[in-house]
Image (cartoon, rainbow, N blue to C red; front, side, top):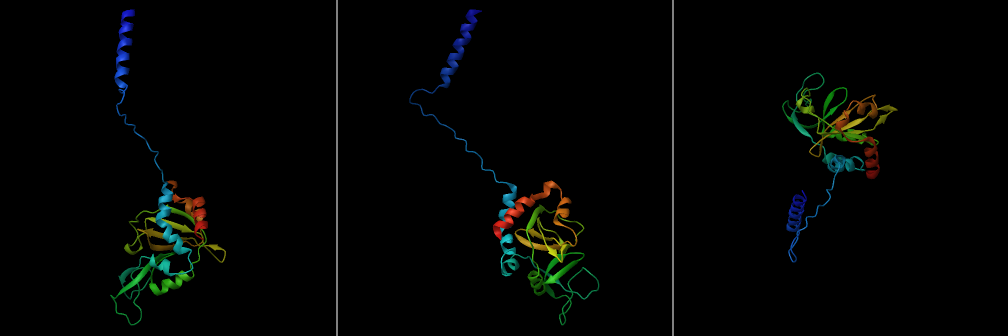
Length: 209
């Protein structure tokens, strides 16, 4: 029994000796750098920073430059929705540069009309940013973006939050929600889709204003 114990000790000594580098032998040390973790909310904020700066700037040029206008053939048809109406003296089928907006109904607004709308679009704080998804039931000209930037807004003490639909760094649609608070709107969004929380959004707004 004692002999076996001595044999085991001898073997372990040989193994340990083999693992110790000989004198003068180069030893390579592998350094493990700590990973730099960037939050998903920061990635989103970096992408949307130009839009935030444009929204809170004193001029319209920056915001207009980030709007994704589309060209659609006009038509003289009755009712809401559908193609934009042809201005007086413009033949049906003429391509018009328009921008989609949604409230109680959809509207394709001309660049001139939209410029006037922006003059009256005075939002307060950004309230949150959440992830959007394609809507199979939406008309092709009213598809949402990838991100939804929810802004606080009031008119005559009535909450009218504004949502900027953003895709590929451009504003592709503006939504107006009448009579509902941003808090209530956000309650209808699943938690995993909220990319920038109200607390983060408030601090972000203050850093831009």
